[in-house]
Image 1 (cartoon, helix red, strand yellow):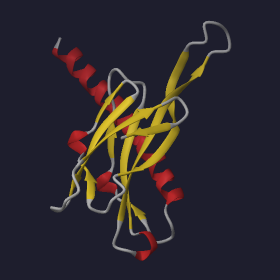
Image 2 (image 1 turned 45 degrees about the vertical axis):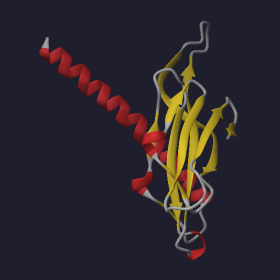
Image 3 (image 1 turned 180 degrees about the vertical axis):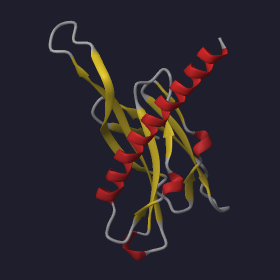
Image 4 (image 1 turned 90 degrees about the horizontal axis):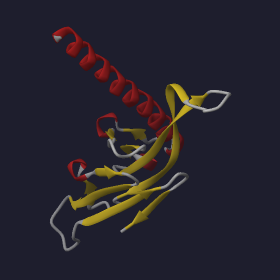
Length: 157
């Protein structure tokens, strides 16, 4: 019984690592396309957001150093898994999924605001997050509600 339980745990851990690695690779490719010759993808900023009641996978990441500046931009990218399907009915999906990019958006556009990763939740087609102040100022924190559609991302403030 213990061996079966341990085997299941190892299998589930490997499966989540596979999703993480695949989406991280796709996110790094996206960051390379979005960046200029001076900016770079920040490895430590990558965070994967998943939910059991959602088909979507959301990656949060940062690109820093645009135009040789001491600056950064925070982004989110939404992916959906797509499976190979059989040629005959009932057209069931099989094999490992390939993650298709739905869209990406810059979040927390003010240099005084930063996304707190603890505040990010994904539920069905909505991602909620909070941009909080880095320093004390008169700007208040902003609550984000982002709708992830089949083909695009909509930001609702």
